[in-house]
Image (cartoon, rainbow over all chains, first blue to last red; front, side, top):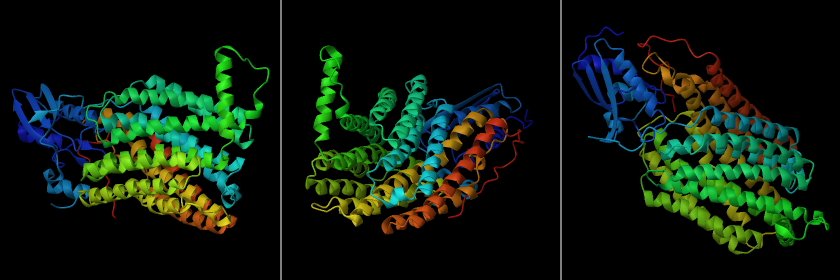
Length: 105
Length: 467
């Protein structure tokens, strides 16, 4: 159980531990996580993937839920995959671009 | 923000079955290039003889078709977002395919065409199951696109290739029809139809028929598939997108139209063959144009080695198209030199484009299958390896350069009919295939010892591969 206090910052931080195994970068720095809400032990995350039909879809989504449930105080974790807006590489953080070797925009 | 309410999370088919197809195919490839190293004369002489036909079928059915079918069981659901219709059918098909191609290669080697027909029928039954399974899967594709069109076209061509192959085998057995065989009933009707077909085909030029059969498979099934899946996989792995959909569609259409016209032109040795070859080449020009645009728009600067294998194979469409146009020239006489050009055309087509492309994609497919089986359930719980940590990228790079060197040496050997050059070239190909096999063993070893959990704070060890 991760002992970080339950707030949005803690959720973003724990999601940095979920990696896309193809791109070798965590989902936060890849810019895949759109929105995080925390309310009474219930965490709701809206995220996307780099492409529809991504073979890692369920692995990453369930992995993110698993990581969230490891956070102290989380009673329910829902990770919803959305496709609007569509992901594009400009959503990556500088760390994400460096980690994956992407061009600058 | 709108959540995707369709079926975004397509559960992949069993990972073990595509792996079984891939490993079987790789063993056939290893056997094929080893055979060519031991018998370089097969590439130095004209290709119409039993041993060349046997090795070609080992490579095409045992290696290429096996991997293509296994990959389609995994890729079609992923690329087209539709669940595979039946894994059980796929497993049955694997057995039929294995028995069929091994028997066919053996019987080609000893030139027993009657048994080729029997084993070919077993293989055809498997291909029938495969086509049925994929068609049922395609019915559930949520968004029809150029890749789905190419996959559908490839299914038609593979069916025609198998029918043509069986018909050719039947034609070789025209003298074997028993005079005492049943004349009445459904069996009699079938035998009569077969005899009639065999008689018709036997009157056509055998080499032209063989060339038409080879083009049905190589272009219709494999080249069309490579072009079609490129429009999905290259953007996916380079973080880009198709830049001009009509151009992409046109490339697939022209390739198919050109092939449809060139097959009868080949069979009846018509001068129209050149026109249809130009149509196919034009389709490939559109393909190259679109691919260049996709790559120029890519956001992923670094191309990994798997993609380099794949993209290098696509570059080989250029010499193959040029050779194809030369060989389709009306009135071109068959002499020693043109015979060597035909051998080179076949080598570059089967080993330069198709095999190199498949090797590149296997470096995407096999790591994913292994990772999915071993680590998918651990993501978010512990630090899991990235896909490229499952194998040695250094060995992968070594394999790439050995493969290229092998292709160059073998090509020179074919043009000069130098058996020594061919032997060296094929030896280099053997080394390249060995690097792949070592990496596959390395990947499969994760089934035996899934890495012990690492702390969540650990970072992946990989860094972007340099250009």
